[in-house]
Image 1 (tube, rainbow, N blue to C red):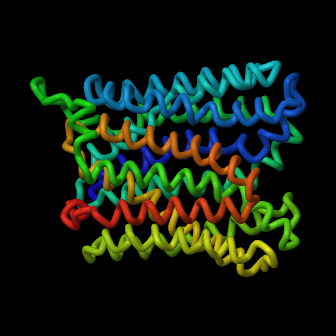
Image 2 (tube, rainbow, N blue to C red; image 1 turned 90 degrees about the vertical axis):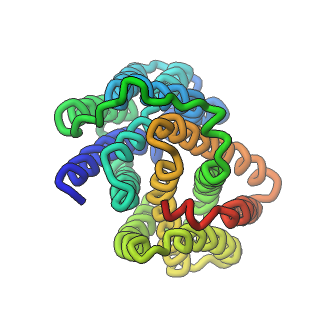
Length: 389
């Protein structure tokens, strides 16, 4: 990487990290703490308040991605962070679960993922873009790990409202990074072509990537609906689940950091892409096999393999989407990409809940494996030249 690419990658990864820490920090404790609010006796309402963020994200990723193509990435990112900060302030004030629901919807309206990813693509060359995207993926994984450890320790002292005040401060810090640290975005040509949604949706390989990000995050939510129960069955108290998650995450990041970069440089991007999809599916079958007599060491290995597959895909998918889109399409294309990611989260939770009600955790792991198998079939038809672009 050049010095400018290193600066852009680090700064935009920091924006993602600050934003995702602000999002993740409430998730481990939201369901429990929301019960203390008026309206907190309704589990469906609490679930809706948690999921509303992803739903409003899905609606606004494409419009804001297209806006970043037309008006510039930085103005859209700053606007989205300001909206997220306003939602955080509203959540900190919220006197009831209904107000929390409204605040989560406002937080989700700050849909900046497409614009941030497009700006990173604008500021890096194709040859180093996966490395830059991997830095973003690693920052997200680290924030998730930090949240698993920090949230239960902080909430007894500051409460849920205090955590939302923390997300407000993190949003303001991210805005400062955009304004003063992120390099200037490339100048736009006065008569540059504008992307149309139809143009983006007409590209088969982009559609395959979009189907992949939907499947990845749908399977992710279904996985985490049932994995905690397995850990409890294996004898690990819920308060100590981070002791299983954190080592698995750290080891997986060490594997991905060398594995993905080395193979990409050797021209094996497609093999890594398809192989990690298959790995994720096999892990689901491993969880299913462990259900009746779970072993904590084996669950630790499965969690590590899961994070290897998930983190590799989390890093490679945005890079692949940005490669397949022409420069004038990136904001729109990544808006579609992030919309499908948000819908995957929403559908994964809804479908996983229905399957769990009917067939329990084994059914959820089976459904997740089926989703990943379908994704592998769809991804198999991708042209080798597409992944190498």
